[in-house]
Length: 289
Image 1 (cartoon, one colour):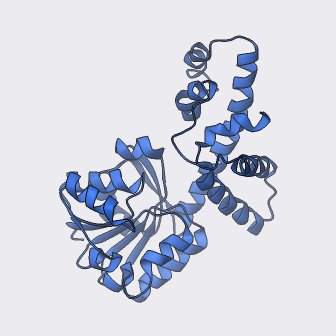
Image 2 (cartoon, rainbow, N blue to C red):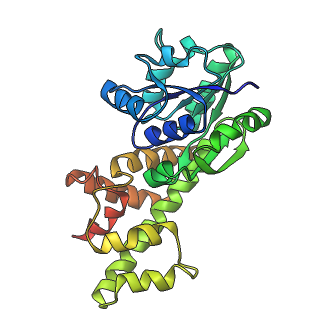
Image 3 (cartoon, helix red, strand yellow):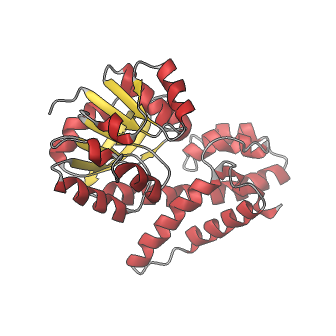
């Protein structure tokens, strides 16, 4: 597969640096973003071209990568006379990095197949820092040969990219990821409160525990800021609730009850109602305040 021309759709906190890595890796890069000023900013910073519609960005592209907000956002840039599918050519590849439902991944795979286009669902983990540092984890669903063909592109912004199975399996793996994060943050929140009440030094505690069985990304990157009441950064509650909703919908299909996930989701809802929806998910520690 020829892989020289890439279109990147969506220049948010994740997509902006990811598209930058694509350009820096030497791919001919076109971008689209709903807010033109952000697209023009990217164009001034990297070698590449901003286009006014997803269709224009996708024309002649070997690969079109999408990283937007939710299922409806994806549909809004994929379908229609100015959408990605209207510009893509047979034999090209669509990669959706948005965290969505598995049903959307299967829907997009079918829509692409009608035009002879390949599809990979490829949600990412690693947060804004991971995107900026080119160190994301990418969870993929699709065909093995296509995954292998686009792996060099994924490597430009990922430390690890893994094919989990057919279409939708990347999204289902991301659901597992988000449930794990929710549980870790719930435990970490309670642990930090106990440590503070016990007059322990949080930085020292993290320095000790991160090397043992309690160690985690959340502990190393969020425990200290949580103890300092710093939450104006990172992955927002609003997005986490969207993701947990997808997780709980998937669980229903398998007749599974997810009591911890439901509890954390309810607590995030309460924090949203307090006006904290744009705060980092680690603000969960404030639920008892």
